Amino acid sequence: MRDFAFLTNHGKTLLVIARDRRIRTRDIAARLDITERATQSIVADLARAGYIERSRVGRRNLYTVKTDAPLGLPVQRDIDIGSLIALLPAQDDPTDET
Image 1: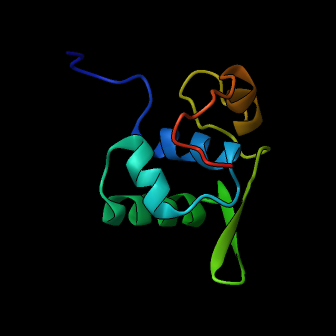
Image 2: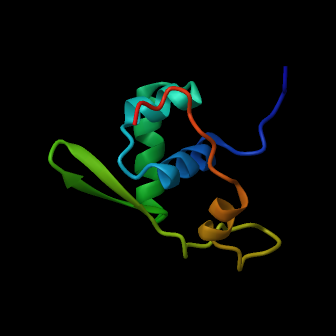
């Protein structure tokens, strides 16, 4: 068992949203094994910080990841979200029915 993770749930949520702009919070929660309430809070944090934008399309949210937003790393402040997304390749999700 690991005692730590390289990315926080905020970082993981951002990556999941970047891979599927129409994903539901319940699906993010299931994928990351966190509660829906925690997921809603994380998504709100990401929106408030300017990393994502949400818009309603029917009954669902459509997310836009602000890839030019800085990661805010203490050493290299010029790295943006797009660089992180590009670094981590998408994986096929066996639970994805699309």
